[in-house]
Length: 133
Image 1 (tube, one colour):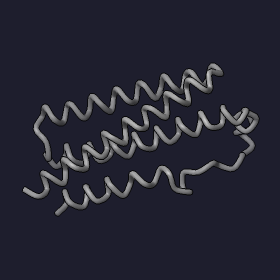
Image 2 (spheres, one colour):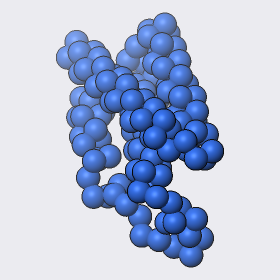
Image 3 (spheres, rainbow, N blue to C red):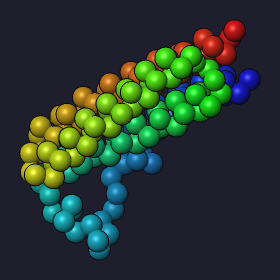
Image 4 (spheres, rainbow, N blue to C red):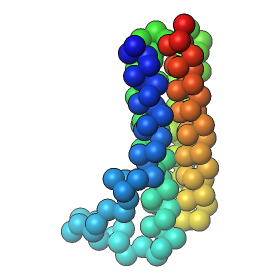
């Protein structure tokens, strides 16, 4: 039953990153530099934030499935390696944006987020499959 709940939460969490909860943040006194960015810079930061939120959500679900021993050690390591790979790619996109390469960094973050969503869906499908056994 717990595995089914985790699978349902996986699917539900995929829609969260696009909802208003994770929308643009109002300017605060300490965030003055980011509010002065051009629109392409703000969009790049938004893409990176969405990639980070999606990656964190997937990582939590993966860790939960590992703790529940849903997968073999090899499968668990595969998913952990994917999380590490996507974290590195998201960090690289952040560095590009930090140096002012907003278009490349934003595009990279968007692409990585798409890969994370695919991984998240794969994890959810695998959890559902294992939960049905």
